[in-house]
Image (cartoon, rainbow, N blue to C red; front, side):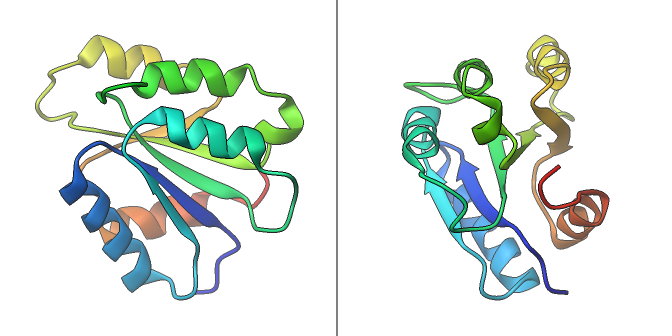
Length: 138
């Protein structure tokens, strides 16, 4: 399947980042993947990105991280101009079965910039299903 997306992974857990990258790379060839261990580096890259030289990006966002966590990232992201926001789709990755932070998951899933919440781990079937539901630029 040929896709028209790039990916940004924001998760402080190095193993989760590695798994997500491998799932994406084994599912789709020749895609761009940027990885950050907190939201601060990612939001700075997004702010400084100057245009449409790459496809829209799907952001896989963890909630619990040091420096800038998922909710703080979303708050900063939603303060960006809509021309920038329109180039990104946010997918929250959460440990829903553990129900450690059900209020955070509920609250974050109702933000206008959050497309959906997916339970970790990300697997090939979840990724394919997500991309079938999305349209580039939405």
